[in-house]
Length: 97
Image 1: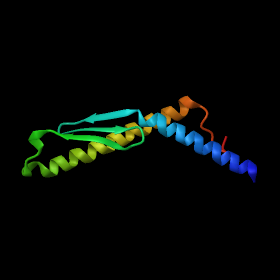
Image 2: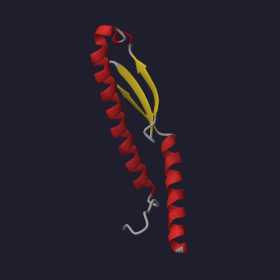
Image 3: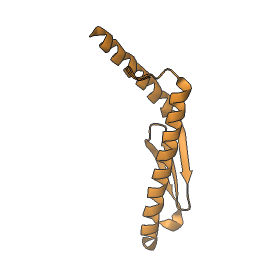
Image 4: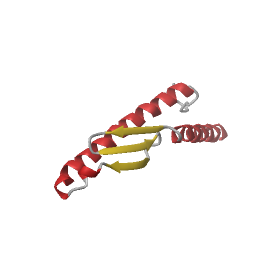
């Protein structure tokens, strides 16, 4: 039982370390209407909307651009996360080879 608790504690430390490394990563996506910045933990840091898209008649198009920017940033953040896990090489889940 104590061995399992130690494994759990080690895993928690590894996850915390990875989260700290990812927090400093910045992913920025620019499209025609929006510039969005997200950190490696997939938390949106900023959203800038270009002025010409702030008109009522551009609402639907702006919504689509925001959705696309968020989706693109999430995909890029996931790739960064996978890369950091591979780089660290020490993120090991007990019982998995």
